[in-house]
Amino acid sequence: MTKKAYVSSLAPYIESFLEFKHSLGWKYETAESRLHEFDRYYAENESEATSLKEIIKHWTILRDTECPNTQHVRVAPIREFGKFLQSSGYPDAYVIPKKVCQKQTRPMPHFFTHNEIVKFFNACDTLHPCNQNIVRHLVLPMFFRLLYCCGVRTCEARLLMRENVDLNSGYIDILHSKGLKDRRIFLPEDLWSLYIKYDAVINSIFPGRTYFFPVKLNTCCLSRSIEQNFNKIWKAAGLGKESGSKARAYDFRHHFAFSNLNRWIESGNDVNSMLPYLMRYMGHSRLESTFYYLHLVPEFFATFTEKTKKLEKLLPEVSYDDEE
Image (spheres, rainbow, N blue to C red):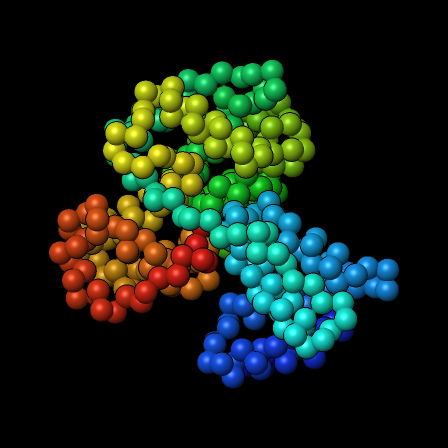
């Protein structure tokens, strides 16, 4: 396979940097894709009036589609490249400070019980509109149902455009998501029917809206407001930490993954043959990211532990950097 060429004025330096990394035995595949992305960005923004430092600082800004750990994975290779430029005597070299985009400790996911799911959505369905968000009571129950039923990332649901939802055929298109992996997700029939009714009501309030889950005509929920609303609903449902770690909206994605895994195992399905489908559905670029869930499930599902003993030596050690 022919490697993509670098196009910015930094191209020879990037190529030398990669040769250096490879000479040390590093595969550097994920980092190389980040360097390609940065190279294109730099080519679009480089000019005599703009320094490399300015461009890199803008590059490091947290994106709407990222969590801090994803940001860290994107920025880390550029920090290393800056060190290489500095050691090579590049006059405009800039090294991103360590305090910028630090990797965060991944919280232990909360594993929802059936009772918690029922109580949460019962509370969700009793919400009322508020002055700041007149469609809150309509949007949030449908938003959290997408997380629960389809395992999408919270940012993917927040930024879902109305034009990317086809309710005639029952699917949604997730575009420009993490890793630039576009995918089409077909909705479960019960959720599909709910969305047809929901869409008609929201259209009557915000005709021609931009987002499928709007706050106003052309705006969607902020990331922090999703967690704030989740916490309020969780508390209103009378739920706490009784069944483990603190619950987050993102844990619906974990729940979706391990529920599918456990269902396949209990049904006697071949997990190895099913995992690629789960990988694509969840928007992972490689199976290692999906294997992340395999390392969590045995602690909570006895059937999984018993039936996957033969797989244990086949499962690679998981890097958590690419997941979220």
